[in-house]
Length: 358
Image 1 (spheres, rainbow, N blue to C red):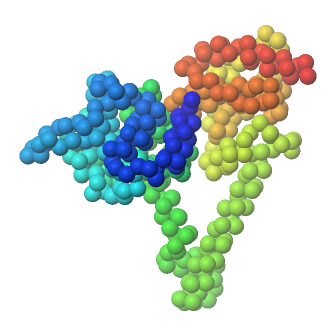
Image 2 (image 1 turned 90 degrees about the vertical axis):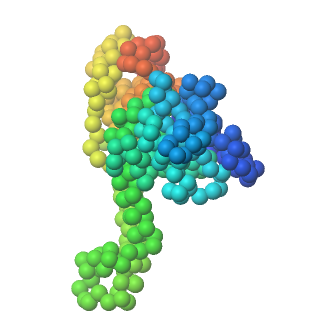
Image 3 (image 1 turned 60 degrees about the horizontal axis):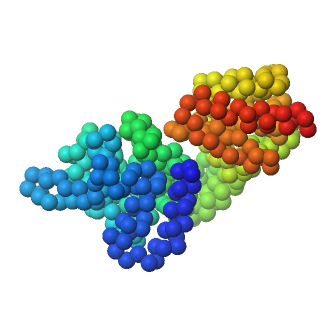
């Protein structure tokens, strides 16, 4: 089961059981421990991996405990402080995290109430936990853009340098999104005045600003909707105008919102060459084509979106090779290196033969 599926399963559990949880201890047992075990991949019953009620005396502070200290390779990597579900997560609730972060080897701290997770590191000052999180996760409204960062925290793919390097961008992008949301939903006088001055030729009075605060919301909504429709059509149709029914709408929309240039990586190119070599057993390698997107890299027969051979999902720490069943339903297989593609050679050949014999 992929981490996204594990998150979804835990999300369903929280939705169904949150009303029954009345204490912090119950929150930890019902929601936080499953998150550590299932999503992060650590054995909560192995003290060499997870230490509950971790004690680290600091100066005159004796006997203070942090809820969980997670270790990897014998070193503390993640500290977790928990509150009861439904309780707010203010910076005041993170005081113990601040103190422990400074005196341990941890580079990541998590403040959670079982539903909301706030992830911190030390971007502003080395070895001092930042006051603002670089990532936030709501288990009842999971942001798909957060999932790759959660994967980096998993035991099997833990990469602290990658986490910290990405944290700066995540932190500021998250804050920018919040500011844009506030401007569009609640308005901002300076922004409204600026926009009005660009399109209104008269004096921007308070009456004009009040009018434009409404018009900006409408204009923004229509612009985003127009862009979504245009790019959705581009993502869902190939150059011949034939619908690409192998791409789920959810992924097409993800590609649209992601924007930017598509970069075909060296691993994707090498994987493509491996598939061509496998295909050469039954057809000319010239029949095998690569078509890249933001969500995945597609390997197609006859350069036809309706004839997918496989997909490479190499943009996360855990790489996946996707194959298809008889109904074109995608089936993902985790691979550790590109040579693992050869383990699925029979399925790849069978897929190609199906197109040849159709």
